[in-house]
Length: 493
Ligand SMILES: [Zn+2]
Image (cartoon, rainbow, N blue to C red; front, top):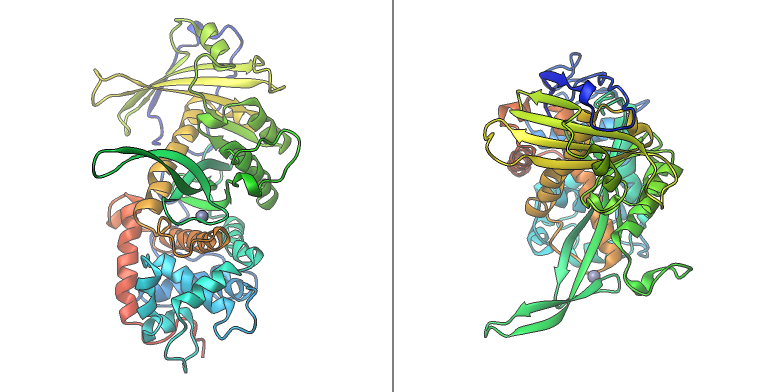
């Protein structure tokens, strides 16, 4: 996503027969790194109104874990947010707040199962970390955590995640002007849980073929949980904004146009996008893969007064078909050479197409052929994108940047959730409990990401640029810190 170092434009041979809008430069170039006003390390960040100064005053490296808790408390009011979480148990000995705090840190420290968590619930450093009562030798059993999750009220636990993102936005954490001064939300399907044996009322089910040890192929039921996740795209990091399960057939609301089967990803995505826009009014553009390249989805986006950048893959479908016909064999309208990325990008651009019958407005189509300069003989990679609403003001190279940022998300966010975090382990097989746990795990992911990029700005540069590996290193350091935790980071006395 580096800035283009040189641009050659071949406007006289523009291959689109309709007039193309002249690209205007982005206000700031895309790419990582700190903005000019940002300090190199441990920089201050505005706190919530009325809260104390940022940071816990510890020297760098003294205890990342204490530093993280101090940061989360002072900047994001983590204590108050956890304290507002409720569950439906009657007079529990271990409060909903303690349960939520325990599971938030279990997620953050990537404790792999309730079995692995159980002994920690009696370890003094872990009890200090979660702010357990000093007179308790053991917090509770893992069974109690599971029961509390099943009865946890969604509003409080969802609010934890939303308030952290909203506060970060108020603190101007998200860089304005990354691309056309717009804010982007990427939607994508994600399936962290599959099982052949255990299932719950919220499970989706499908028939799959499996091979037994004797080589016999059988068709069996596979149960799974699938979600649509909304993530904020930023040049430096990705944050989770919200997520929504795909509902099985017997939990769906019945009505006109609703079939008997399980819900599809698009149905859940449209519901999610409406909620996301309602929650975060400052979002401008929805970004999606080829599943979202259709009129009904683009219409929902337009009704929310948002723009869209959606990948299109089927050359036989409108409006890509019309754009390809108009371009014919003509040369690209623009060629961009990106020396840092060692790429040459040829771009075709066609605005204002109205050939998609299920969408009433104009759609711009951008096609990009990306050629790697390190291997010029290899075949270029082609991207086609549908662009609507406010996103149509982006120059063509930036449309590609946004589409590729979503692709980057698959390789960082989802890959990281699956390989490094514990989302794929079923702690409690109950649709509601899984959702409550995911809210807490996503909140942990966001807090850790914000801590890394806002408080430890030189950390990533010191340890390479792979965000997944950088976050894993930080978690390893925090696990070491935990063993040495002699005072609770919640203790203000
Ligand atoms: Zn299930």
